[in-house]
Image (cartoon, rainbow, N blue to C red; front, side, top):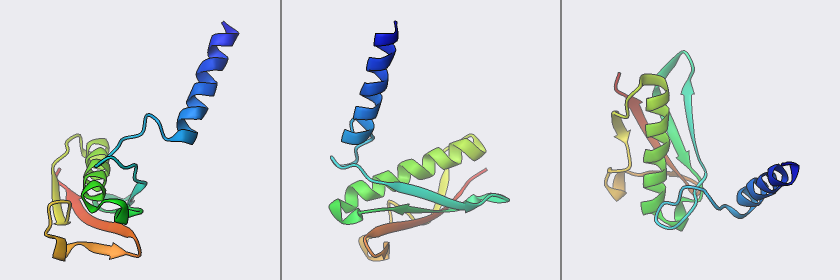
Length: 107
């Protein structure tokens, strides 16, 4: 039994190091984060790092993070975007190579 547990642990570490079992967007892995005021979590900002790998993938990675955030705090995925994944290319905001999306969870 110990050997099986050890294999699982080694496999989990290997997955984290190699990126297996990570969500892919347009064939790429993106690091995305959501920032918000804990006292008022409805309004949020999503930053997707290395958006230059694939803007299409970065858009979807941002949508995914926002969806998780809204479900966690409000129980649904409805998002009202100021600048979102469906915004025209000319409206997108970049900070260095990070795509910055802003929105609000509909409660």
